[in-house]
Length: 163
Image 1: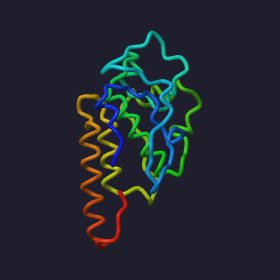
Image 2: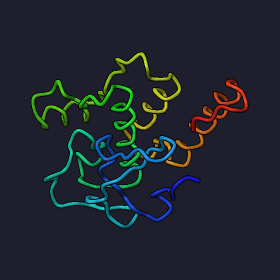
Image 3: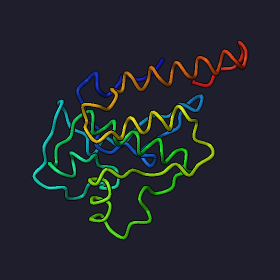
Image 4: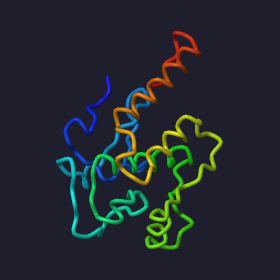
């Protein structure tokens, strides 16, 4: 059984990242570290102090607001990290101001991994749409992954289960 989706209980995590992932029984990934999380569907901060700028959505960089759709953006960064062996996103940039300028200009991280399945790279790009309303929900993300994994598992035979 899967955990309860964070969106079902109106929690904005605000720090989804590989460093905050625990691997449990049957290699199940679990998001942890709810230190920056908040209750509700939206949160606006006065400043962006002590937050992981490398993971922030464009609207958060501009307005300091967080929603479940900003968590979807961050999930895209998380997937990029996973398929790039834990590399630091935007590591080539000298400071957070340069990252901010890059993201707000509509630029995104590149896929330099031969391990990244095409459907997940496409899903990652969907998570990084400039307008939060155009990004998928976590439910849609899970449905896409479930569908692909079901097809994959069926192609491997009845004794193979990955997702």
